[in-house]
Length: 89
Image (cartoon, rainbow, N blue to C red; front, top):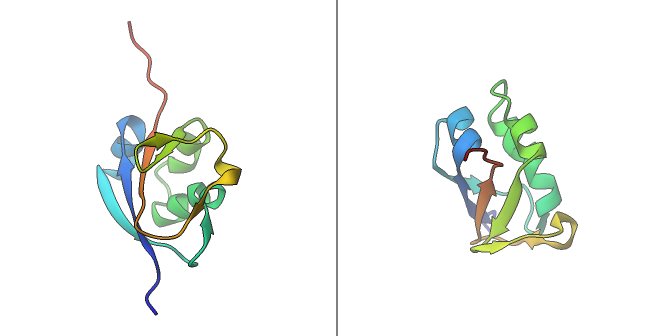
């Protein structure tokens, strides 16, 4: 059985750090908590500061904003977006 895969969308600072706007990511487990995704993505992109960016970011799964990452389990097939804080006027 193949490992589940998700699509990660990177915006703003996350996109700048990774130099990507989209990435297919194979999850390390068939039931993977969204709360663990941050450290997993940072391990895929070491040394670019993604870990710090993700600490202040919000998440959406299948175009729905996530209020509590502890309550979401990824199973494969999801589109996960990293929404970084922005400033401006």
